[in-house]
Length: 78
Image (tube, rainbow, N blue to C red; front, side, top):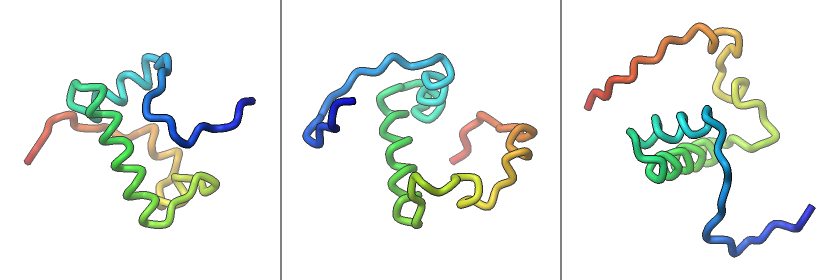
């Protein structure tokens, strides 16, 4: 595997349909905004102490089995 490039400013990635849907939802229909919003969320998690080696559900105190039963309201309320 090639070593990571720390000065990368652009990259290409073929998204799965699930990944595309996530970014579209995060960005309210705009993939670029969705990508930025997901990065913003990760930055907040990082400041709260989350690190990649930590299980995210454990960190958030969420039962992973309960995630399957969640119903998400897609309406935006300001």
